[in-house]
Image (cartoon, rainbow, N blue to C red; front, side, top):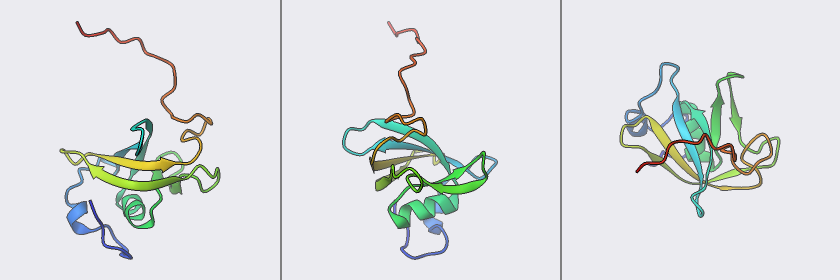
Length: 123
């Protein structure tokens, strides 16, 4: 996926492929590019995706604060973008990053902690 550099809006070819929820958002799964460790899930609208594609750092839309936020601006735990992929349905993004420090606001490396929900194993 690519976006024109220095544009004020998301590339229309990218925008038309997105299937947004009623709030105009798409789920963005963030993954460490080299280990493939799943780090977190965030939400992006067109502007957050445009910023992510053109600035080299991940930008999200905060559903609770109703504002944009860029991972690492306050904590220093930066997510440097390596690649961004759209899934086959257009309703989710996979953002591969080089994570500096913790990805989770709790200070953990990943937002997916050790609390196993004990799903039944397939036989």
